[in-house]
Image (cartoon, rainbow, N blue to C red; front, side):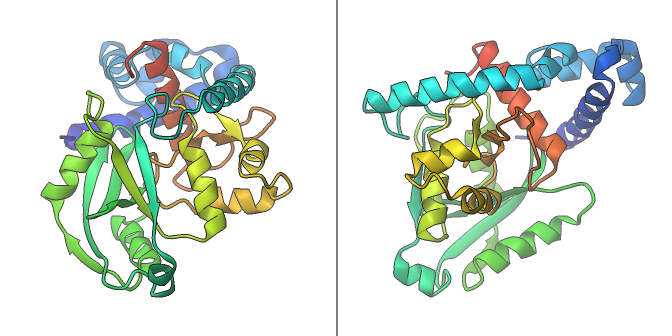
Length: 286
C-alpha cells in the first residue's frame, strides 16, 4: 500500500521532470537537479530509479517530440496487427486487461440513482488519487492536483454520479489500488463502469485498445470509431474521461508529437507516459 513517503517522492519527481524539461537543451547534471528538489544526488537518483526503473535523463528521452512521433507510427502498426488477429480489448496485448461496462439507457436517464459507490483517497505512483468503485467495477479515478483541496475531486465525482449513494471505505478501495498499481500484474480482469453518451463510450472503448507504453492522436481515435471528421467531439470525450489511468486518455497526444494538456496536470501526463514507456523498455510489464 502507498504511504506518505510516496507522496513526497512523487512531488519531487514531478518537480525534477519540470526542471529537466525546461533545461533539456543544456542537459543539467544530476547534482544540479537533485539540489533543485532538495535531495542529495545519491538519494535523488535512488528514488527516481525506484520509481521509473531508469535514470532521469533516460526517462526524459521518452518525452522528446522525435521519440513520441516514432511511437505514433509504432502504435498504429501494433493496434492494426492486433485487430487483424482478432484480438479484443480483453487480450493480454492490452494494458491492465480492463473491460468496460456502461450504464443502461434507463440508468443514464435516472443519473445513477440507486447505485452505491464506495470511495477512498490513496497515494499512487502519480500522487494522491480519489477512487470510486461499485459492485460493477471502478466508476471513478481522478488525481488530486496540488493547487486544489482533495474534496474538490470528491465533489466532481458526486456531480457526475449525482443520484448515487456514497460511502467512504478506505480499506475496500485500497485493494483496487493495489491491483491497479501494484508491482505484480493483476491476476484477474479489472472492470470499469462508466456513465456517458454513446459517443463518449465508443471513444473510451477505443482508448482501452491502446497498448501500455503507446501513444495515439485524436485523428486516429476518430478513425477507429468510424467518425473521422469528429475531431472536436473526440477531444471533448477524451477530456471528459472520469476514470484516469485505467481509461488511458493520457496516451492521446497531438499529431506533431507534443503531449498536450491533461485534465489532472500536464506534468502528470508526462510522468505517466514516460513511466509507462520506461517500464516497457525494462520489460517490467507482461
